[in-house]
Image (tube, rainbow, N blue to C red; front, side):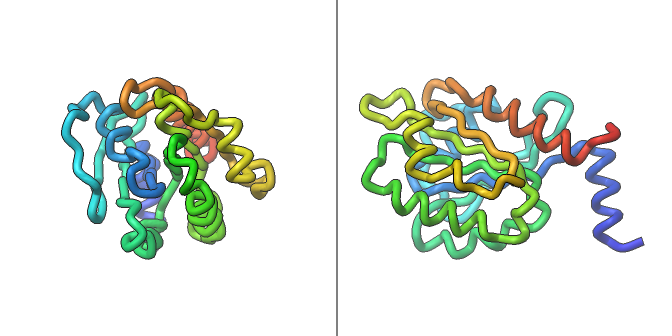
Length: 185
C-alpha cells in the first residue's frame, strides 16, 4: 500500500479537508479565517508567508492554508497545491484598480493541474465598503462564466469585518467538497 493511499484512508476516516486560501495582498484572507473561527480580528498584520489553521466545521476538520498575497510571495503559492480539496480566492471588491491583477493571478491558479479537482469559492470581500463592486460585477470582471465547466465554483459576497456571507460561503464549499470526497460517508 503506497503512502498516498494511506494518507487518503486517514484523511477519509478523519473527515479532513485541505483548503488553500489565496488572493492578492490586503484582501483580508487572515481576517476571514479568524472570523470564521470566532477569534479576535482587531489586530492583524500582513501575512509574510503562510498561516495554518485547523477548524472544526460541521462534522469536518478543515485545515486551512492562508498564504500571503504580496507580489513577492505569489510565486510560492504553487508549494501549497498538493492535496488541496478546496480553493478559496479572496477578492477585495473595493480595490477596483487591481482587479486586472486579480483576474491574472486567478487565471494562472486555475491552469494548475494539481488544483483541477478542487472546489473553488470566490469571496467578493469588503461588501460593507461604500463603492465596492457586487459579486455579479466581480464575476464579470473575472470572466467566471468562461471557466471550465467541470470546475465546481461559487462566488459569494462577504465582509470579513462583519462576518456577513462567510458561513454561506464555507457551507457551500464544505458541502461541495464532501459530495466529491466522502461519497459513501
